[in-house]
Image (spheres, one colour):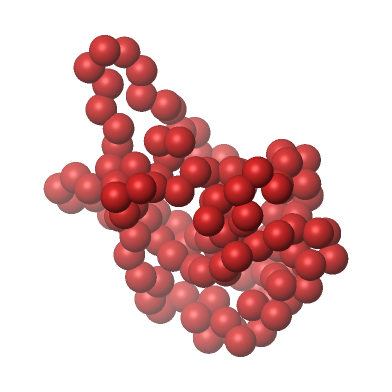
Length: 130
């Protein structure tokens, strides 16, 4: 629930992410949620291949029964002075309460394999409810 804090007045719920970078949930009576914002993706190979990427990702999601609502590519940046944007994220919206962990893992890995076949190896996959 807190992973996308700062994204719109009502941040979406994270379902799954492929990143190996740890995320620590804020705890304690004075815990503050780390705020994020979305920034654009510039000068990345995926921009040039987007018309190939989207149909390929759609086929993967459809073949695995993932009820998706959107496919985007974004970067997130923490809302603190001097923060740099994180990696490019293939950000997939899914219908709430329809994607279980094992299915998210296998479909995200299939998406990463597809991107690797296009020589795109520096992208994370994140599913959010939308």
